[in-house]
Image (cartoon, rainbow, N blue to C red; front, side):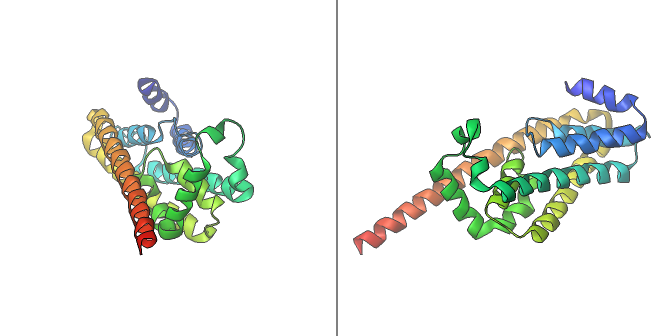
Length: 205
């Protein structure tokens, strides 16, 4: 699939290529299985061939990322928890998980938004819960833009520097994502244990 995407973007005219980059970045934030980061790296590689410009790739991917993120934010804000409590989505969002997530957002909400692009695989969930828990839209939009701007810029620099060896970046991203997932699980587990011990201390007192 990756080879097909690379071939497709390389064959079309620059304007269409930028549109494809925008759409892939947008869809990645609404349908996470879409490889948005991969397409961004491919776009960066095509800069080295003279096919695309650095600014064009940066702007198109960043706009797609931000608009996709903000779309999910609006969905969460408009429909609230009803959106994740209906149909198949309810299997993935248990009531106790929603409560725990709200605690995290109450404490670190805007910091989570600022880091969202660096938390691959959870971006659409972060934007959705940011809307559900009614974070202010202007800071959310600003921080999401900064996060996308920095992350996409780093990916593009890596893709540009590696040139035709850009697939190496995908291996690094895969390892990075595994590390983020493990760290997230450890932090969540630690937070749950901390709250449990705190409650026990209060009961003992």
